Amino acid sequence: MKNSDTTLQQIRPQLPVRLFNGFGALLEKTRISSTRMSAADLIETAKRRCDLDDFGEGDFFEALSRLLESCQSEARLNLIGKIALKVDVLETLCSRLQMERDRRLYPEIERQQIREPLFIVGLPRSGTTVLHSLLAADPEHRCPLMWEVRSPSPPTHVDEKRRIQRATQSCNFFNWLVPAFRYVHAVGAEVPQECVSLMTPTFMSDQFDAMYYVPSYRAWFFGQDLRPAYQYHRRFLQHLQFRRAAPR
Figure 1 (cartoon, one colour):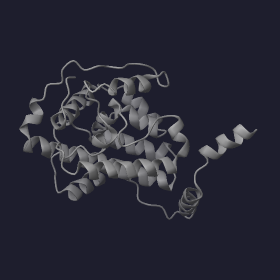
Figure 2 (figure 1 turned 30 degrees about the horizontal axis):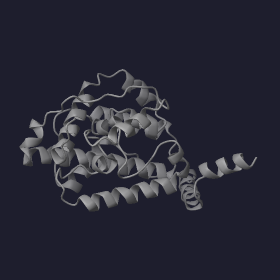
Figure 3 (figure 1 turned 180 degrees about the horizontal axis):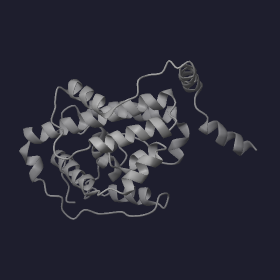
Figure 4 (figure 1 turned 90 degrees about the horizontal axis):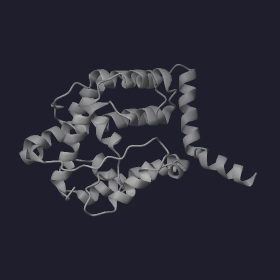
């Protein structure tokens, strides 16, 4: 019984979180709710925020639209969930804008060769993350880290400490918000990051299905040609390798 109580306590949201979400639920009941998010509005917001307008090659509008529609009609997001969705999408859009700017400022990025990449393939919860972490411990391997995937621009060592600090604060907040998640998957600024995060700028990634209950997006996603997502994955790796290279 004691173990069950501990487990329930671990998954129970913090009191401030419950109060905040309760306030959001009250707004929903009184129909004082926020306007639904649209892909077009978020794209324009990201452009204004970054003072940039070039997202590069690849059309992600349909993918983003389907993700937002599924999140808002199926995921049953609470108030914090809605805020997190908007923040995550805007950060992803801004990263894509900034990375495209970086490719113009640093033409060498496009000439980066991704040689002999290692692929880990396996079912969820089968130990792939452990293997990934073991391989990342070898200095011969260039493994993306959470902080640099979250803040890939600029592709230099400028503001590196500040970016790591911001990522650490974000991870600490997430661990406070969802304390039980650390028992499922390690969260940290300098923890190796997996490929799904490098595909998020295309909005065609398993990461969204893992974060939200989005059955219609999932069904659409599984029917897509994912070559654009893998092509962007390669572009992201070029970006990271330009900042810090390794033998493989």
